Length: 136
Image 1 (spheres, rainbow, N blue to C red):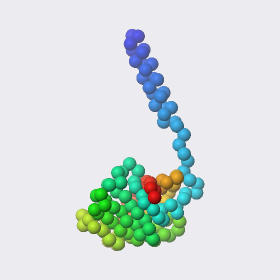
Image 2 (tube, one colour; image 1 turned 90 degrees about the vertical axis):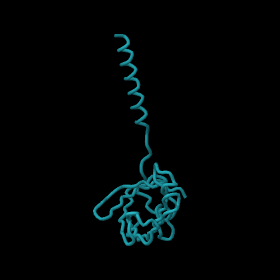
Image 3 (cartoon, one colour; image 1 turned 180 degrees about the vertical axis):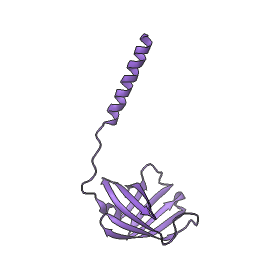
Image 4 (cartoon, rainbow, N blue to C red; image 1 turned 45 degrees about the vertical axis):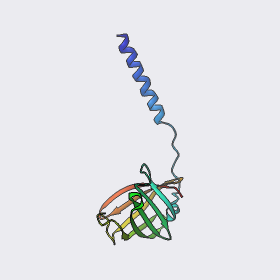
């Protein structure tokens, strides 16, 4: 019985430590969002190795690199306002990639925090969020 009490107390202590670790204060998003951060630089995705995917933006041209830079998708960016823009695919190297020349991706920056940008992307009725990390 004492072993059960010690085990229960240990589990309770472990749970309390986990709860405390999860309640550490997180930094708040920028208010208003710093949407201009997307207009130029080098970006990676959170939790993706740079060799799998990275992106550069310069002079309203977005180039996404895949497969250690062997493959790419190049898009022209048309800004509707500071936080909304369209990416129109102009060129791609991988014929098997589902993105096609002429595809239009509607993007909205929904939040920023320091060098992080959360972007909502819509194409043909599909919507998804991506978090970019600006590294340059």
